[in-house]
Image (cartoon, rainbow, N blue to C red):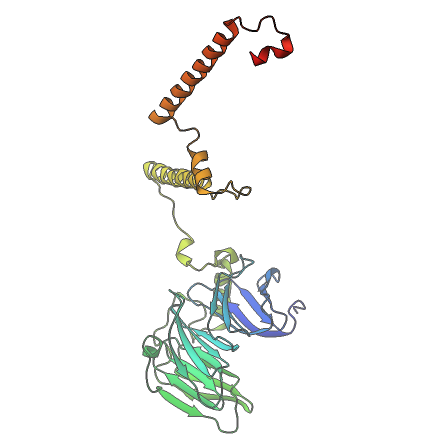
Length: 356
């Protein structure tokens, strides 16, 4: 029993990390380790209640759809969102879906639109309009078929609909009097889609939606497992459990190998040092060229600024001007000496000698 998860509106399980992620009306995203029962991390999204949550199968990053039309990407090791996208301006996000390759994301909004985004550039590719109500549930199968539940209708689009906008859907299915649809999910490795509605659950056949080839290296993919094999697979998956800190936007950045060659390591360190020195020099230049503060009235004029800049600059004109000033000073001193040597007015009182 996990009492810390309250008023839950959406849940996702990360099988390779054994993490259970929940979010609800409180707007707090929580990661619970199901193998030990410990709370790994919790983050306040600060974006209000949230009910749309899906994980990216490519890198295990969680996508949250909020009521203000934005989608945020989260990982357990970061207290802030990794990416924030404005997908539906002025309408809430009602559902999310991400394909197996992690390249395309489908979002459903209250504006009765389903938009396709390219997660490599975080840009919109195209959009589809739904009838009978806003899209309440989305899912993308293993082969790329897009399933949309809107009102009492469900439409299915071919895998090419994620890359190129198509005119008509692949299949349609109507559940009259049972809408709005609550959930829509494809069964893995089978051409079956389950739909949850007000009257229960319905399953329909969607040809080509399941992956025909099983991966024997994956856990729990063998449909003919007995109880002993299932226990062994559970123990093996626990031994191979990944750390939550390894969840990142670029999964290739984890597990990199450092260069074994000493020369290559030294070159890399030298490049890092050169980049740091260049950045430091650029910062010093920017500090020198920083905008001069505004001075008192009259001192911020162009002539005053130029005069202050040229104050300590010594050129030919400055030298000539200095020589002329020295000559004038010497002439003044010489004239004063001549006046003093002149004997006129020596008999006058000291107070009147300045008049002679």
